[in-house]
Image (tube, rainbow, N blue to C red):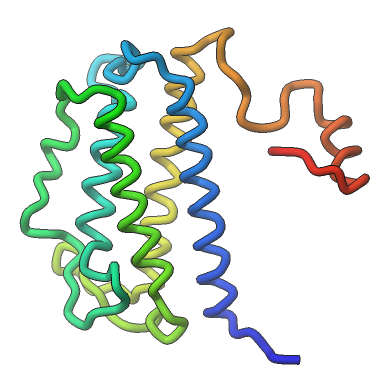
Length: 188
């Protein structure tokens, strides 16, 4: 039996967990009507369009240089990035915003897929601040998850009674647990 290092387990978990976070966000985005992409819940709030723009911009900036694997001296804040523009409402339609979303996630996941366990202790900078790759990953896992959950709340609120739950439906815990225990699966 071969032993698996904590670093290997961590990378495997991050890869799977972040694909799950992406899928959660995508399941929310598929419920948006075209006219809802640019609707924040409050003045100065983030719309789904802004969240998609920001996540894509951040993912390209942070992980673009590591897309093919660890590269010494990588700066996780691209000089070409215009972060402030990510928070401006634009005129992109849902298809274009989904394309931005998909492209950003692809950059991030490509980078994570190419990281090796030994890379986790190597340095990378974000805005000149030195992090280990592990610290940078943890920072972004929290950041991306936070925005995806913000997106879920936004879409759920906009859709109201038309919202289709992405987890265990209220009152459905016993049925879900029974399905899990019987091996027929469930979601949540």
